[in-house]
Length: 245
Ligand code: ADP
Ligand code: ADP
Ligand code: MG
Image (cartoon, rainbow, N blue to C red; front, side):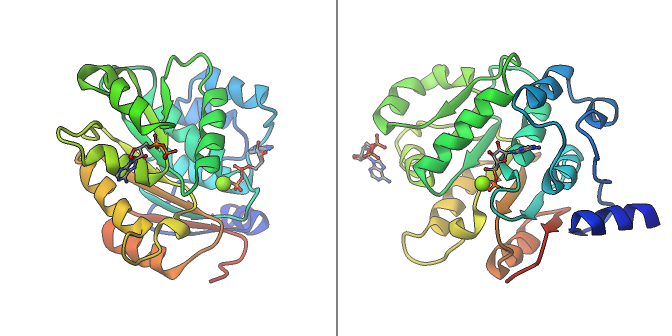
């Protein structure tokens, strides 16, 4: 326990929550302890990621425990891999059940980047990832059965809300197990037509009882923390570096 506390201190990781998983120190541990398939671990090496960054050390095992998470770590600290890796492990392979994970980003550029990283990390898993580029294309693609072939959705919120509000809705989120919000501090800003309203609408469509939510951001903000504490069962909070808000 003392060694564990020391390790977290050195990595500047602080955790809040009950029975929080130990941080991993190498990606190789993921195979033994968390049954992460070899090909995922190999993909990390191919991407040029020899060792986990602090946020990856702590966020990945927490998400692999199946816990909802609020994670804060500085810009450039590897948050994208921290949420993609556990999602890719959890979904295993394609199942044709429709979207089982959704990643929300506040800008198109960011959604694009996440999508590209997801393609690289999911190489050889067979998982199908979709980025909503054009609403019109999405409407054709997801009509009735065809969206069943996709496993992961990456998008900005506005398009999703539009597609959900169609009659009949173009997207089915009833199978969503992981709802990931990147740059969650931006998505939680309140106000009319704000991201927060859209966020609520999207979350409301994720009706599965096994749905987990993971919120990632560069800074710790009180609105996000309050929302997470109030709404997420079994929440763990992780901060790397200063809790600067
Ligand atoms: P953040 O979202 O925290 O700002 P990113 O996920 O965009 O950070 O990652 C920043 C950079 O670090 C990217 O270029 C990414 O490829 C790289 N990176 C991510 N994880 C690792 C790792 N374990 N080792 C080395 N580089 C990494
Ligand atoms: P872009 O966002 O670049 O305009 P999209 O393909 O995403 O392209 O959107 C195409 C069209 O879908 C929009 O011009 C608009 O008519 C409709 N649309 C998208 N989002 C919404 C929304 N939130 N409410 C109403 N209509 C929308
Ligand atoms: Mg990021």
